[in-house]
Image (cartoon, rainbow, N blue to C red; front, side, top):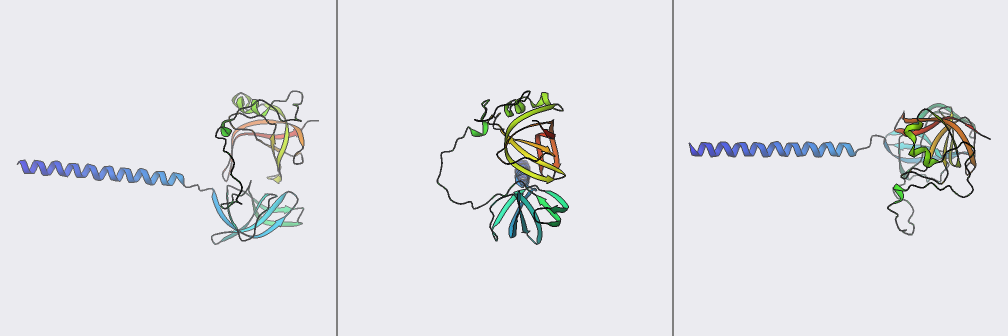
Length: 239
């Protein structure tokens, strides 16, 4: 009788160990799955076409071949890069190249897995959490305008409202989804956020200081991995 009890207890203990191992394995598998980024693409450049504002790349991803467009960038043929997301435009006409692409994916930029070696610099671990109300030299807010700091720090109260922003154009991506996409900075920041994306029909130039008036939209999901915590839509130039 005693042997039976001991064997039963041993069996129960073994069963609990097996269940625990299975549970741990399932958790490990779930964690591994969470790490995979479905929006990440690894591509090899086969052809390059440079236009005024964009670099068009004919690339291969596995057995697939297609065109992507990025802001004007120096890229090497035969080299492998990666990128996230991408907005597909069908029958897109490039006026600069005088060419219509059956399909082209607009991407904000490429990640180089083997960037050029540069001298090491001290890493500022606080940079990602910087908050500053100071504006860059040469930037003065227009009448009624708010800073990038004020925009991000008070975004919950500004949702759906019209705001005026003054800053320097650090990126300009024209004619995507029938709009121009502008990245604006003014030197201020809130917890690391110092760049605001703006959609507009207005045309601006890189490094130009402009004032734009548009509507604040929160949690904008455009699909294809493009999500914005805050976006300024349908902005117009203020003179």
